[in-house]
Length: 382
Image (tube, rainbow, N blue to C red; front, top):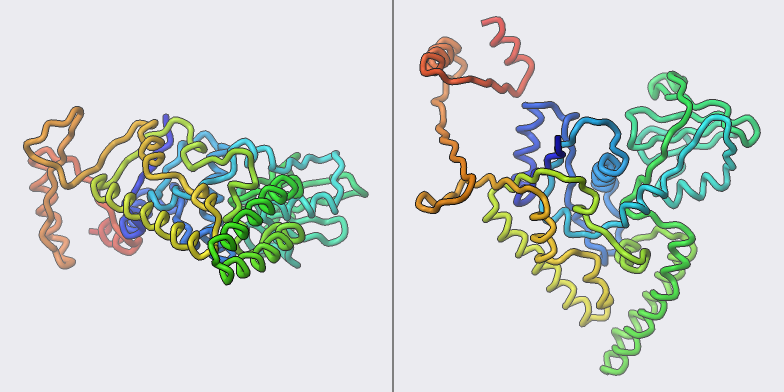
């Protein structure tokens, strides 16, 4: 009845779990919330694949696309970065219905604020195209894009598109266009952030100058000018994510997007150590960059703290999956699973069959997982 969240220590364990689940339940039956390898202060645009995967998870959590409960794999490092408030993420979506007015310039501006990119022809999520009175939009809510046909400024029809044939298919009455980017940024957000950001830059430059760090002050002055111009004119630019605390009155985190969930903490001792190391690295990076005049004191507000992570994760029911238990330690509701490795059969199905019969006689229940369709066919034929 609840969503299941697997917290893995790092990307190595996450990839192993991902491969196991692909074999067990198929790649379409779980989601991955990956870590962003780019830190907010780095003047680089987010990796499109990573951003798409993260946004897909948020979209599923916010819009509850179906009643099926979700399985999500992630790591502590992936959830340290803060997010826009859940209600802003939800309320910023665009609802398009047949028979209603749709003004193209306003739609274009709104799609830009949600992170969509205009293309000649849509081929992947996050893209849209406008050709006269025909608008194609590819969201994360569906495996196919939608085609909206206008009659004047009125929505005449909405259909799914077959990407291969570029033909319209199933007709629907309405669609929801959710954000494609982790951060929703429009003119209102810019107008709220700009004065505060300008004032913060001014204070930081003055402090560097007072400390006789003239070179650092000059660098920050030039950077401030460029960043503020880009914020006003482009909204999205390399490094814009570092200003998340300025965009909204209050920020959120990954846990705020969850309903009541069951969290499986895999190898919790290792996860706790890696969580500590990751947050210490964030703090040390902040301290170094602050001394160089490259970030604000508020930069650390882009992340939840180590103590916040521990507090948030324990708000849910947590199941520790630990292969490093202490034999003499009594833990409430502790369940031990004994495991052993099977000897290799080297493709000899007769030996494999004998082992299965031996286990069945001992009243074992047996589940067999295979990593290819050819092995499945061979086993069936045997």
